[in-house]
Amino acid sequence: TIPSVLVTSSAPLPDIPVFKSVLFSSDGLELVCMFDGLTDMGAGSGLTNSGSLSFTCANLLDFSKIGSDTVCVWEDSTSFRVQLGRNSLIMGVSQVQLFANRILPQCSASQDCNELYVPQTHVTIQVPLNPNAPVVSLSTASTIGSCDDIVIDASISYGNLGRDWSNISWVVESTASIDKSGAYNMTRFLNKYYTKNTSTLVILPHALFDPAEFTITLVLTNFFRVESRSSSVVEVLA
Image (cartoon, rainbow, N blue to C red; front, side, top):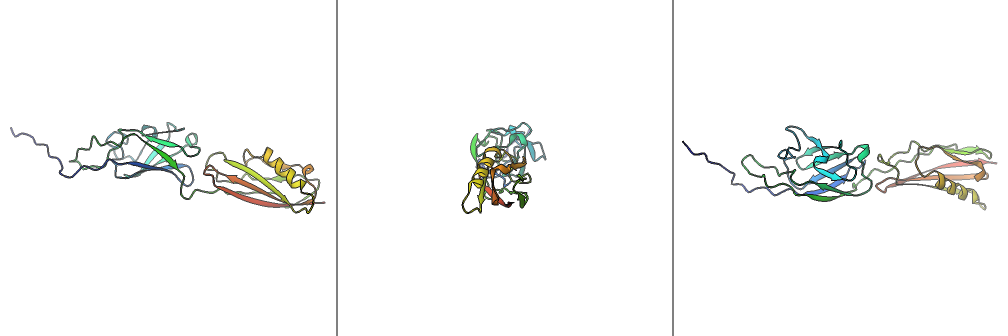
């Protein structure tokens, strides 16, 4: 009987990849996760099935509001994307934990890498380099009578990245040379009653203002703390 001989590679074993970064996508709907070296994409631990690039994120990661249906997809052997569903959107910057014993380095068939699992790692989620900005849209009449209310529609504004707006604020300015009380009253009214969302039709009662020209500005801030503004001019005739 000829004794069997185990042949191993003389090449040095690869370094254990480091889970180095987690970055929001520009639209805030995904996380981009990066390692600093080539991985086996979870094949060795059974995280991914043969030939599949997608896997259940909860089997690899833990973070606030992760859903059991949150899907991860490998882009290549060094990075994967977390596709955030409506119930797993992360508000603000928080941490992601990578579970130990899930990811190995990429090795040749002759190398024994079974002990080189990436350890448990905590990484802070970073905002993207070029986050999407809100797009503010105001629709209102350019001229009204002194007995008319001012009606404003901001419902087609977008850029909240699938979440509630971080901040909604209003500013009203007047061309009236002496009496600025109308602009003041309108600003207070708007910031008291219309800072929850942009889907509600805004109605400014005519009792708040006298005839003048008003510039009404809406400022929207998304959860990346990026803000945009838009203004409309309304002339109230005597």
